[in-house]
Length: 128
Image (cartoon, rainbow, N blue to C red; front, side, top):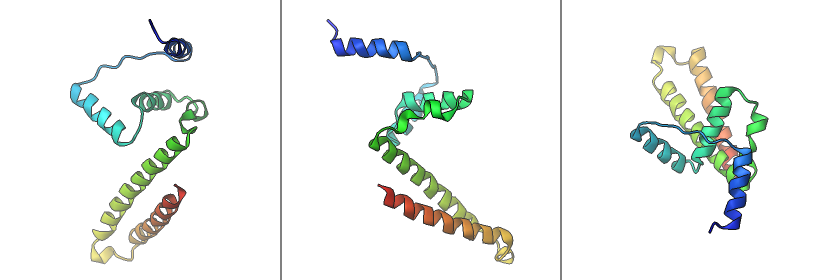
């Protein structure tokens, strides 16, 4: 016999959600599972967010995923990781600018970007 709470949950889910079957190559499914696990993200939530964005549904209708402190902390960690990646790429760009272009507007823009990203990372580390 089914647990009454599971039956209630199944009824609620059936009334509020639609199931979508997706078939992908095993290596894609494995990589997706690993990426979701590494980012502490639900596969269903990632797919749902992508489908909403792809369908151009307004974010306010789909952005209920930040209701818990744990979810917000996870989102901050993900943004921090992306900023760190951007910082590394910008530093690599700056470090590879030829000597004759150092001091150019591109080099100065890169320096300014690095400074702002570092400040943002410092602020992000203070959030949680």
